[in-house]
Amino acid sequence: MPEDALFNEEKLAELHQIANGNMEFLNKIAQTYIQQFEAKYPELKEAVDKTDAERVEQLAHLLKGASYSVGLEQTATLFHELELAGEKEALDGADSLLLEIETQVERFLIEWNTHFEQLT
Image 1 (tube, rainbow, N blue to C red):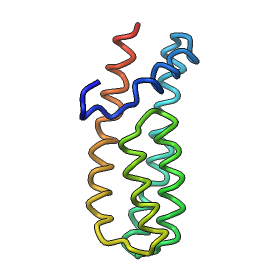
Image 2 (image 1 turned 90 degrees about the vertical axis):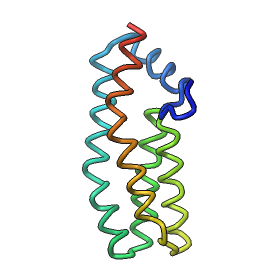
Image 3 (image 1 turned 180 degrees about the vertical axis):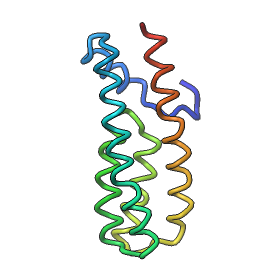
Image 4 (image 1 turned 120 degrees about the vertical axis):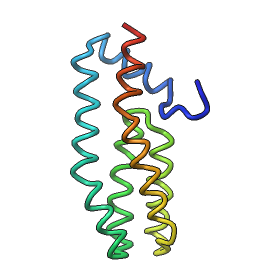
C-alpha cells in the first residue's frame, strides 16, 4: 500500500467480504459516509471558527469514528487530533487540520471506487 494511501487495506478487505462483492452495498457505505461528513463537517468548521472547543471535540469524535468505519485511518487520525485539541481547548492549528481533512475527503470517493473496481 502506498505511503500516501488514504485507506487501511485490511478494513477495505473486511468491507468487501461483508458486502460479498455487492458493489451497490459498498457504494451505499461510501454515500452514507459522505452524507454524514457533509452534514456534520460544516458544523465542525463553524465550531472551530467560534472556538467552541466542546463542540469541536464532539463533532471531531463523531467524524473520527465514521472515518475509521470506512477505513480512512489517516483522516480519522486528523479528526482525533482535532478532538484532542477541543478537549484541551487549544484550537490553534485547527484550520490547517481542516484543510488537510477536506483534501482527503475529496480523494475519498475516487480512491474508494478505484479500489473496489480492482477487486471485481
